Length: 412
Image 1 (cartoon, rainbow, N blue to C red):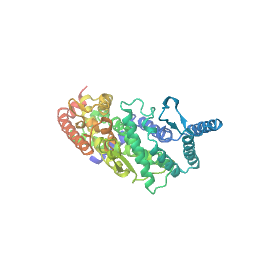
Image 2 (image 1 turned 120 degrees about the vertical axis):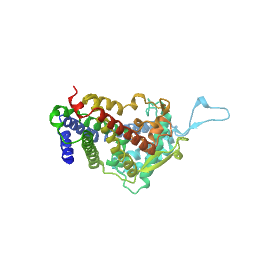
Image 3 (image 1 turned 90 degrees about the horizontal axis):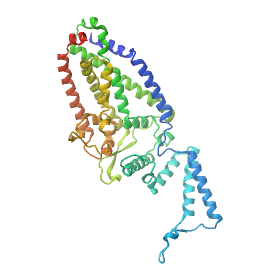
Image 4 (image 1 turned 45 degrees about the vertical axis):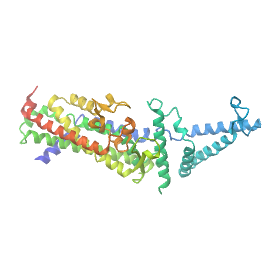
C-alpha cells in the first residue's frame, strides 16, 4: 500500500499541469546556460582576440614612433627632473617586452597551445598583480573593491599554478573553467543552490492542495493522516531529487561534450582566515571533496523545504500562497544581506539557517570572506540545518494533530 501510494504521488507530480511547463522552462534555461551563457561568459580571464590585436597594434605604432624620433632609451618626466636626481622611464624597452609577451599569448591561443599560453599568463600576473589590483572595471560597484580584487587575484594564481603542477593536459576548457566538473563547481558557488531549492519549492507546493478536488475518495484511504503526509513528503522528496540529479547530470554532460569532463583532483582555493589576504590566508580543497561536501547537504535541504511546504499547505490550503511564503523564506537572506551584516536580531548570523541555504559558498569560505567573519563553518552549517529540520518536524506533527484529515478536506 505504501509503495503504491508513493508511486501514485510521484506520477501525479510528474504529470501535473504545473510540473510539465516548469520542467520545459528549466530545460530551456539549462541548455541556454550550458550552450550560450557560460561558454561565452565575459570574465576577467577571458581571452579577447580583438582586444589583443588592438593592443598589439597600439604597441607596434608606439615603437615605430619612438624609433622615428630616435628616442629608444630612457624617457624623462620633466616635472620630476631634479638638480641632483633624475628619474627615467624605459618606455621603448617596456613596450618591446609587452609586445613579445602578448604576441606570444595571442599566437599560443591561435595555435591552441594552451599550456604555453597559461605559462605566459602566469608569468605576466606574477610580475603584474596590478592588472587585478588596479582594474577599476573589476568589481566597480562592490563596497570593498580592493579587497575583492586581491581575493580574485589570489584565487586565480592558485588555480593556475595548480593547473601547471598537475599532469593533466592544459585545454581551453580547463584553463577557462568550462569543463563539466568546473562548470558544476562554479554553478554551486554562484547561487546554483538557490535555483535548485526553488525547483523543490515549486514542485512540492501543491502536494496537498491538489487533493482537495478529490476529497471524497482520499478521505477513505486506509492510511493515518500523519502517515499520508509522510508518504506525500517522501514522494515529493524522491521526485525533487530525481529532477535535481537530472539537471546536474544533463548539464555536466553538455559541458563535457563541449570542453571535456574535468578532473576530480583539481584544487579549489578556500579561505581559512582573513588576516593578510596573502597566500597564508588560503588553503585548498580538491574538486571531489568540494562537490561531495556540497551535494551531501542537498538532500537535507530538499527534505527541509518539502516538510516546510507540508506545514504551509496545512495552514493555507493554497499552492500559490505556499509557493510565495516558501520562496520568501528561501530568499530571506537577500532581504537584509549586505557586506557588513554579521548579526541578525543581535545574534551571530551563523546561527540562522537561511545563511546556509546557499551552501556552495560555505565550504570554500566565500561567505566568510563576503561578510568579513570567520564564524560560518561547514560543521556549524550542518548542525544548524539539522536543528531547523527537527524543529520543522515537531511543528508539522503538532499542526497535523490540529488540522486533521477531516478538517483539512472539509474546510472551505
